[in-house]
Image (cartoon, rainbow, N blue to C red; front, side, top):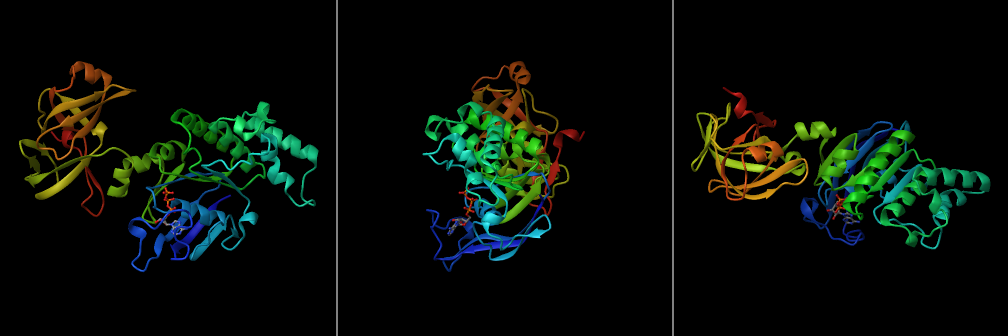
Length: 381
Ligand SMILES: Nc1ncnc2c1ncn2[C@@H]1O[C@H](COP(=O)(O)OP(=O)(O)OP(=O)(O)O)[C@@H](O)[C@H]1O
């Protein structure tokens, strides 16, 4: 089922403020005490897509999700599920499944009864027979690999298992749309990873349309077909994970999606100088500017390169995972840089703490122009 939001906006008034246990915060705060939670938002979600809403705390993700659910009314705009306008349709009639961070399972009911709840609570005329309910619930429990846990109670399950029961329960009524609010937020890293893989799999198998909220970049990039990056109640960019990472629409998206190193200096004749450091910046006009680069866009060497003379010393080494993370300092740098290099380079350069090296940027990004620009100092001969 496709979802189309058109000019959806929301401002919380004084009266409602804090009803979720928090006050107004951030830039959405208006002088008159109201909070602008969402600027007018347009969003087209295709049938079968898995969409991540990603943004810092207070950016409006939950508000948007609750408006799609019908738990909150927008001040203006329209919502369509497929051809059907649901802007004023009650939550109960939207055919939506929910999964929230704090697994709201009924503690006094068995796993089976929790999953069956939506079906047994249907009006008698629509309710499937108890045999049909049994078959459906057992199918769902099998799907979430909890068929042997049907008679247990929530307190006898791990957090990850409880969350899988929540998912089975959400899917019991065959929703057109599944909404998830930080579904794995309360779980440890390994279980999160497992559940993500598993949600992705389930999604491909069952073809529902999902919208999930997260503030975890990795989770959004790994799970989503497309990610909606939000800040201050606005959509900053909607794109596939790959496009977001490679072609961020603006500085906010670039900074929010990964570690960033900063280089500030004076540019003259396409060379940036900062203390005793210099680097070629082809095509950049004279003046004082700030350029940004990702940790993997730094190469380290024991000689300065023809296009870069950036002396640094190593302050920390973390050889974990597929790459080695190296922290670098220099007196021409305002704050340390982080570089990620291969284990091969790490060994070739015999890197230890205190070692003096030269950094060579393979790319530099600037966001002070109307469109972001990427420079490649090493590719210029
Ligand atoms: N019931 C409410 N009453 C008043 N203001 C609210 C209410 N709910 C949210 N807000 C405000 O609206 C803005 C957006 O909040 P929202 O919960 O949508 O953000 P979020 O991106 O989901 O944040 P988080 O990641 O912290 O949950 C915030 O400034 C918040 O304080």
